[in-house]
Length: 255
Image (cartoon, rainbow, N blue to C red):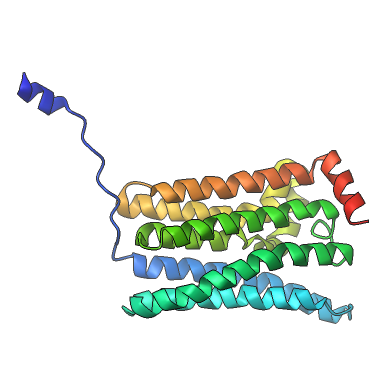
């Protein structure tokens, strides 16, 4: 009787492997892809801005851009330090990362407010209702970075949360490249609006899960929670942007 119970007892799932030999290249590759999308998107936007001889951007826009570039460079440095077995420097530099993340959380909404009040940019990003997207992104970023800091001694959780945090605010770069063609193909509305902004980051987010399934045969719990957190805020932002009450409210605020 005991042997039968033991035979049919359910097996516990294997623990999530903290490291895989492909990790060294995967996380760096994903960061390069994110950076490429941002550089291409904002690069084309800046070229168009200067060719049109438009008025200079407000100072806070430049500060915000510098902070974001600094964040990308810092994260790249952190990955390279781990690749070169310099976890000691990685931990010390992490304190600067916490400070920079806090600055970005303040700069993001502040920049959005200034830009909307100055009526800078082209639709849909110039529409007052778009603050739902901007605020949603920074809320997602703040939550993920906070979780990553709290779980900094859990390497698999920490690095997945940090990568998700970058993806939560990477939509602007990709949208500048893909937003127009996707809107032309899909039209307007809840799902087309979401796709025009977030389809590329969503593919990269799902790619993290696909990688974990390929290398560990399971998903990390923080990846599931982090991905759901991002998608929930993205969909909320898309709903608000297309909601007449929200459109009227934001139009009055930024009139």
